[in-house]
Length: 133
Image (cartoon, rainbow, N blue to C red; front, side, top):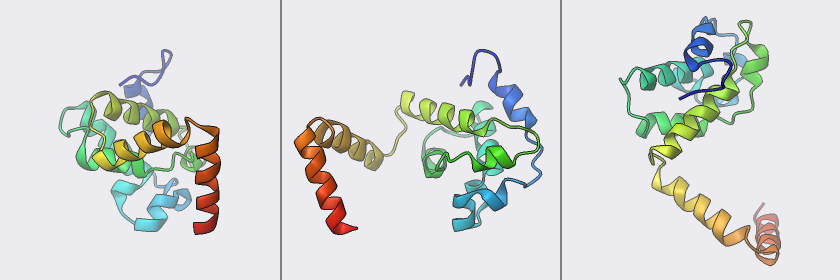
C-alpha cells in the first residue's frame, strides 16, 4: 500500500499518537463503541495488514468498508494524520487482492452494471427509493 508519492504510508501511520481526539467525532465509533470501529483502531488494523499479521479480507475488509470516510477524524486530529488517504488505500488493497465480501461485490455489480448504465433505470430506481424512504 502506498498513499502518495510524496508521503509513504509508514510515515502517515507513525503520525498517529493514539490520543483519542478522533473518537467523539467518528460516527461509526459512536454507533458501536468498539475500538476497531474507530479511526485509531482502523490504523492499528492497517498496520497489522502491512506487517503481515492480518489478512486483508474478513474483519479488516469489513471495518474499512464500515468507515464512512467522512474525514471528521482528520480535522479533529492534533497530529494531522491523513486518515482519508489511509482508508482509500486500504480499500484499494482489498479490491486488488479480491478480498471484498460477496455481498458488496454483488451490490456494486447491480448498481454499476444494472442501474447506472441507463438513464431510464436510474430514474426508476430513484422513484422506487423515494417510495421506500
